[in-house]
Image (cartoon, rainbow, N blue to C red):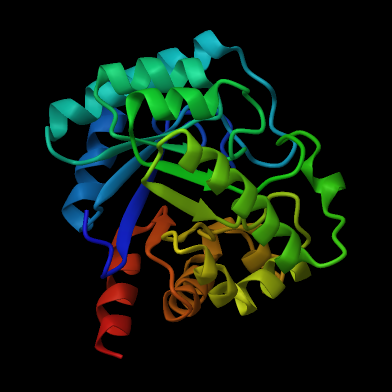
Length: 263
């Protein structure tokens, strides 16, 4: 995939408790219709999530996540044989089964920190790997937002993990600074303000701010009313070097990309 122009990763959560769309896409018909919508509006990748990573989310068994993800992969493949499928998971066994079922890339919120076998598994299957920054787990991450210098510490985090992946022969690494994960609202905006600093890592950046609390808390609104704020922050991220926008609303993200590309 050519990332010289930013691409869109459409979110398709097949969970029952994700923060914005939990419970909407659990049946085959619902998944099919949403996949068709994401593709028709311009998604370049569909990201399937079977485990909610919202703050305080309940822990679910691996078997439940796997069943959800495999159903999602199978359904999307019935819609399109060519759309790249990403699987949002931090479990290496889910990675293995997902790739064998037809997924193309992995999106790991833990950057390999929650499964010691993750990096070896990514290396073995040789798939693109989105590595996000998070401290702790989805259940306790909000208590881990303690940094002396957030930019330096996250750069150090990625540098060490990129070196480890490089030693294993992994070439296609994408970084995600993890907006909303073990960061306060003000820390999120500090990261966005200094996003260009992460270009020193020479890895494409994925940005995920879609309808997050960093938007609606500042605007005193809610998730349903956070689309305009999402487009604003996606525009800023693009101007600071974002290569992939991970979004719930593909049509609006494509409009952002089309307009910013002219600039």
